[in-house]
Amino acid sequence: MNYLIIKLADYMKRNLGYYFILSFILVAGVIAGSVSVKLLSDPQKQELLNYIELFFTNVQNVNIDSSTVFYASVLNNLKTALVICLAGLLVISFPVILIVIFFRGYILGFTVGFLVVEFGIKGSIFALLSILPQNIIIIPAIISIGVTGMYFAVTVIKNRRRMHQDGYFSMLLSYMLSNLFFCFFLILAGLIEGYISPLFIKLITSYI
Image (cartoon, rainbow, N blue to C red; front, side):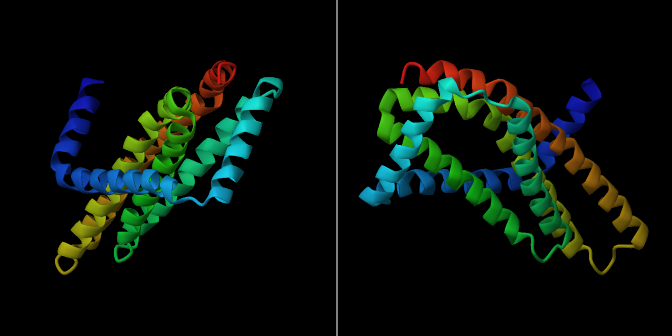
């Protein structure tokens, strides 16, 4: 266990620059998402409000299928991971990684921003307990997969003339294993979203 922690810490230290870049892109997406809430037209805002209020009204009477939520969460996050992984693998398309990270930040910023703006403290508490728990794991995992993709693509570009076939396949194997490792955390986040967050949602909505 200590060996794994040391290797992970070393990995993050070596790729600190990439982590900074992708974290900055994510934060930019969150800010853009939260700002775009104020740009909604009144009909758009009212439509969203009606949808959320309908959800709050009915959630207490609906039996949430935790396994369905779990599978949907895992599938959605693994799709994102696959897009990032392929973008890094194809090398020239690695800028797609930046777009995906920005978009994830935008969605998060918009969702939380809308809840906070329209529902105040209650919306903040709802976002804190229903959205934050799984994203504490999802966001670092997605960023780490993005970092792995950027590192792989940049390394291949820098060494394309002197990299031997054996060296490439060794790096490719390391790339795939690293991504599988971070995907494990996406599955863990799916368990939280499927089996823990719904409990918080039902608890909170009774007070909203």
